[in-house]
Image (cartoon, rainbow, N blue to C red):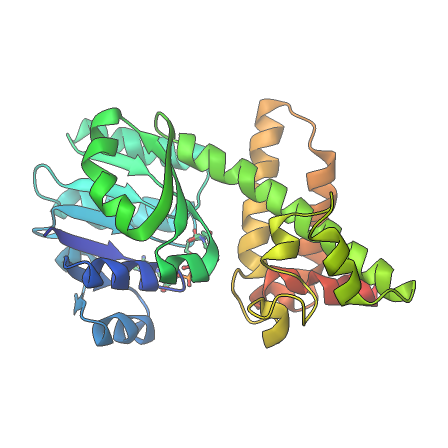
Length: 293
Ligand code: NAD
């Protein structure tokens, strides 16, 4: 059993922390939201009244925060100063590669092992413990983290050195963002051509248009009962987070000098849906925006 300090128990971190509790670990959680803390307390986590309190005495510190700025702030303000010698640090947030590498470097300078381990699989995967984890960091950190990663995720891939997990996550979500926009446009086109949505699903889910956005997360109500389309596009994966990930990919492409014009177009759709009020809705809700455009 490990003593785990878990910082950020929102939509994703909450169920991940609960799975660690269920597996017998001693989890102390901290979050700025009391509501989110109450949820994990009900499932057996200990609640800390400050970030430092969650970190003190922990064998492992796990963070699941919205963006790079929160990660930097939490590590530099609280984690590094309060962690014990030998504490393993795992950041599961989705953030930019440069920030991730800067935090890794600072951890290494202080003698800590650290991994970036962003995840894919959404709230459903976090709850079921079936996330895919993309991991960056040293072999030593990866070997030490394996038993914990195996509880929160089903698939784990050691992608390379620090920041490699974030690079993989960014490329994956760029594909996801493009794919969802293509599926949404196809269903809107089908509607206007008088083609039944279920029929299009039946065809494309077994044909070459098949992809995760269609078969697991269909943006129209009906074909995939668990998809957010059946629940008024309640996230799930909020449009604001998808836009964040698309922008991370666009920024990385710009600095690498790579042309990602399809991704640029898709990002504009999420941005426009977000500005029209969809930022808190599931990203598959762009179909409503496309329909109205
Ligand atoms: P969320 O907003 O539900 O949770 C983030 C939590 O961090 C919130 O509870 C917030 O109060 C807390 N927080 C923010 N600043 C803090 C601080 N300084 N100290 C303590 N707590 C703080 O977001 P989420 O959906 O859980 O996403 C978390 C990360 O996971 C993001 O980087 C996101 O891109 C990534 N992600 C999300 C999904 C998804 O489907 N939601 C899927 C894969 C990856």
